[in-house]
Amino acid sequence: MTVLMIAGHPRSGTTLLQTLCDLHPEMAVTNEFGCFAFLGNRYLPYARQIVDRWQRVKNKWAFDIAYADDHENLSKNNLRFALRHLYHFRKQYRGQVTAVSLEATYRAMFPYAKVVGDKWPHYLFRMEEFAQEKDLTRLVIYRDCRDVTSSFLQQARTNWSDANWIHKVDNAEKVAARWVRGIEIMEAHADKIIVLQYETLMYQPKQELQRVSQALGLDLAGFPTDMINPSSIGKYKKGLTPEELDTVMAVAGSTMERLGYAL
Figure 1 (cartoon, rainbow, N blue to C red):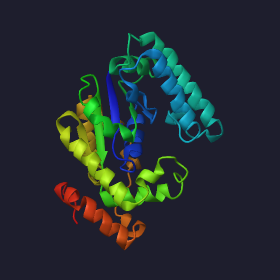
Figure 2: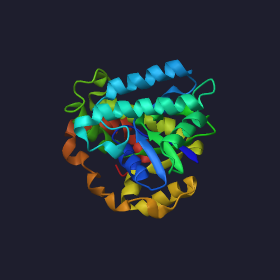
Figure 3: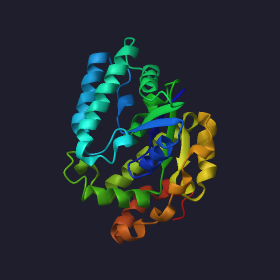
């Protein structure tokens, strides 16, 4: 069995990648449950952090996409998921939270799965810590900074407008700078992670997912590649103002060029 972490700057395709993985018949990948963020903790602090995670999320999204369509009971189902996780984790606990104990917990929760794990974009920004975990497989996806910034700002002005952290990334300069930081972290640990480019995944899904399936020991045919749609590529052309686009290029242009993006 393999325990998998999916990361990447927000709006880079992490949700699509998590869905592709979770729908594979031999995989179970949760959605921004955040359990890997608490490696090294003892049981009681970990339990408090998991409950706090539920309190922050409640009905915003489903930890397990198996019940994602039950919008009316989303908060309740997320709480049940968190408590079931803690129930199984308590049986695996051996002094501190480890990738091995989380893998065993997920194994109990998803006995059919050969590969288990969690997706949370923000794992990327702690990759220096996670890269040292020998029992963890790390999968990072990146995307054109222009599309990331456009999509991020759209969310910042609508669904995320009330978030208490949004002031830190509420304009093109801040988002682009954070994207650059994420890319630099990814590059620094490239030898210890599986790196996917969003655009290549969109246009050559079987080629990219073959790399993932080989690394994880899975059958490529299990990935539902028919759900992949490249129509979101280049949406920045309508989503960013000329001034915002100039800002993105000033901040991230050299990094994008290094990654092979046409400027």
